[in-house]
Image: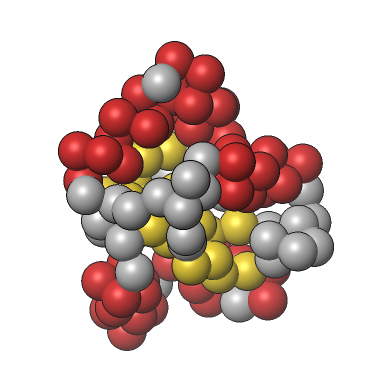
Length: 110
């Protein structure tokens, strides 16, 4: 994978506090796992930037190597990988996700 892809990922992560790499878009998710994470973030009032990995095979492959995380969605907060659907769901249910956003200074619309 080219360094250019990793550089693009770093720039995307630096541009927004919360970034979701997903299949599809928040309005039209292309898999149930992506839809669930969008729902969790929306319910929490979190503003996030999303990127559709289905439209960009180079980005999709680059992210797998960048994060050493093979599946999507991938949620990042302040440039750090939080995890995929299972981890985000567990964190939302336990209150850890809300705590993480508070600790990282991520504003909620709620």
